Amino acid sequence: MKIAASLVFTVSLFAQPSRPIEQFTTKAGPLKITPIRHASLVMEAGGTAVHVDPWSQGNYDGIPAADLILITDIHGDHLDPKAIEKVRKAGAKLIAPKAVAEKLGGDVIVLNNGDRQVFGSWTIEAVPMYNLKRGPSEGKLFHDKGRGNGYVVNYGDMRLYISGDTEAVPEMRTLKNIDVAFVTMNLPYTMPPEEAAEGVKAFHPKVVYPYHYRGSDLSVFEKALAGSGIEVRVRNWYY
Image (cartoon, rainbow, N blue to C red; front, top):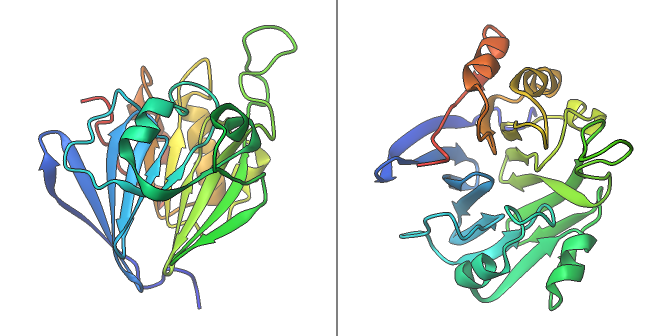
């Protein structure tokens, strides 16, 4: 059976001014996603809260403490030890690439690109995120292949893609059966909206959210995907 054939997409009421809660129906029950700020978001389902790249600049009022934390990269807008400690429930698990684990120390579940980890009703797959051509100087890249992780998160019959800081790399373009995608776009560190749209067209999720987009013209992204059958949902990640 095709994955997520029964998936229903709805948007619930605001948790607080300017912060929408995205709610989805899956075979395992409702899944709620709250955009926090920039690259930070929280997924809630089945009594479990999964935090992605918690950041001290985000507002976590009313957000449940983390049972599981996913970190994508070593940069400060993704790896913020103070924010991790603030949102982390006692006994919570932390999943991260090796480069992050080396900076954090302690009890970190290390996933390399291609690895997966089961956490209760959730399955986390680490996928590549990296630059193909953009970097701080000639011959250097902002994000080297293998250092960071994007993630495909599976819950019930739903597959979510969290891109992390990446360009439209081949591994993104060949993703399969993605229901909801969070895709980065900002220069100079990742990619412009038109390149992000090309990558999204290739793997064709049902719904895509631009995130980590500070300074980008999201109308370019929307126009590039018009008529593609992919629903673009623009939300305010910088309230």
